[in-house]
Image 1 (tube, each protein chain N blue to C red):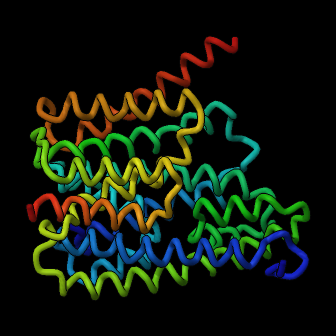
Image 2 (cartoon, each protein chain N blue to C red):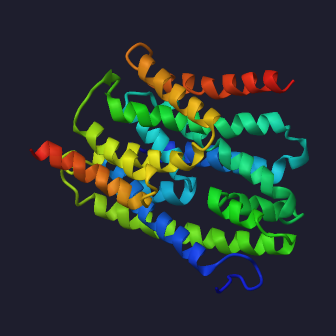
Length: 100
Length: 226
């Protein structure tokens, strides 16, 4: 759950990084290697977040209806289905299984 | 094909596709925050001030998975490091005045930087960056506000399968990045590490440890090259 304080801290941190890249750092001074590392870090984190949101709840591994919904979403993503459709299908499949 | 702004290579169709995607995703993201218990006004403020879906989603995901507030903020900051890198890549082609680039930094996203960078003339880089930032940020803010208001009306998010929307959205965002063998290796190791550690380490830490494959893969590639 977001709070006003969290929003403020996130806003400062995210804008700070954008401004750092855009206005404060001389772009010619960032090494190629640093760029590569920075480019890959978000990918690792996003995948970790995705895996935990699929297979765990409150710090415990759980297998439930959402795994099927997310598997359907992943299959559609590989077929390059638009993002909004992917998300709607994930929710619909999960809801349908819970209903049964 | 019409070009906007005139004389650049940005097509009207491209601008509409991006505007539509950001509008619809913004609705979804706000619904996700709403189901996590965030009040309507805080969601709208977060959209306008943080101006990044991945940062606020990562925070919400880390805390929803049992992570502390500090771990959630660290996760949110870490997911937005790419904006700084992208901004630095475009900065030499934007305005020489630092204050103009400071303003432009606020709307540094992936598609507007990629499309601006495609222009050959620096003058057109600036025009496309400004135009595309508006085509992206305005639908984004509008969609997020609509989603934040709608979220209040949804009574039982789990029955609607809304806990599956988060990971589905992230998979759709990650997918285009998984084009190289190395990216796939980093992605799946990150996921495996997080799952292996979730029951052992306190909440939040598995997310940060999951960043290690990215660093190790680049170390490996450097020794290959040298």
